[in-house]
Length: 209
Image 1: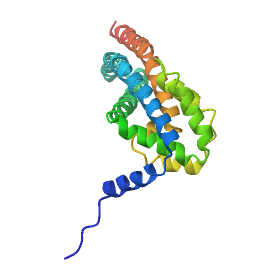
Image 2: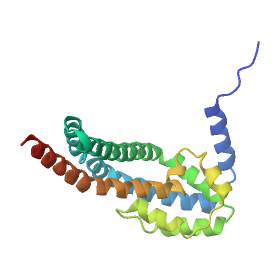
Image 3: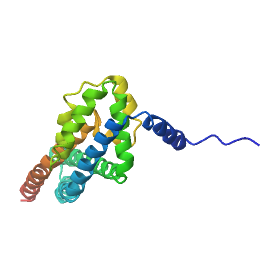
Image 4: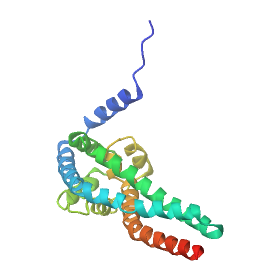
């Protein structure tokens, strides 16, 4: 009888367990403190980020509907702007959901953060940076975390390896930078979508007269 090969998920879990066994105690402790700050910060931001995600949706829908009823260049411009805004909102929503899932198991996240530090090849430098973040926290948890990592030089190999960590990869370069950029774009999307929808309404009324 042919033996079943272990699934990719099982192999990945064993790989993470093997790497976790090589994390020293000090690094593990720093990772736990940093994880506590991350989890607390994201719990506080859960509702505000949901509001940021929902707020532009009515304006985006209105823009698309008005564009569909328009003609000529107004139709094309309205559809392009509406679809671009919808894409930004969708990408932000997906990233938000993945990050919230990543902090559902704090102990697993702490383990992966410890592994990420160990993989850096510059454990002392990286651990010091994470220690500074653990003492900061605050509402701007993701931007603070990006600022901490910006002072640490990371190799391409390290970036590739941390990409295999399903939770920690969202809190280390390069994805932490992408997350902050998406958050800023989502914030700007609220007033921008309102202005675009207003112009779409004006254009629709003007063409009807």
